[in-house]
Image 1 (cartoon, rainbow, N blue to C red):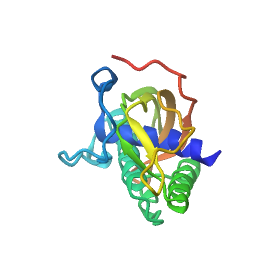
Image 2: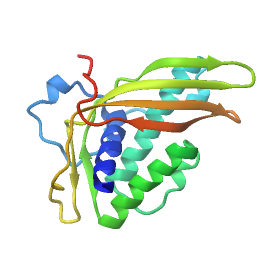
Image 3: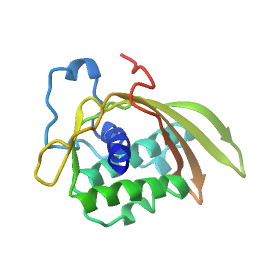
Length: 186
């Protein structure tokens, strides 16, 4: 079901915008502000440490998808500079479904990415980022502003392959597990 994929991916997306502590948000209601106003993050390409740059690229991917999911407009070009292959196809499919159905995402999701593995060399630089994204603080709304029935939210294990390609940190593979597949760090 594409609606479930939308909720799963976009819920992770929202985490990058608001890295919240799930324990402090238990009583809160999702708001209509999908992204928090804050200082612009340092572009991953400006970070010398490859593992830190990969984490920044992972966060940038979710920031971009968060903005797209909060106000889907059918323009998918913003994903071209930050993703490729399966991760690009997935982001476009998620925004496309939201746009076509008139859905949007609100609220926040907690991200806490870490490096699981890395291959850093002259010819190949790949980093596997692991995360337990908690989507409890978000919600999918339909075109009338009503919650979409049947959506589930909670902690989900995410793994992403981040590659340095032609001087750009790009997400190429993204795997999101079902809700309940991990326990977020406190």
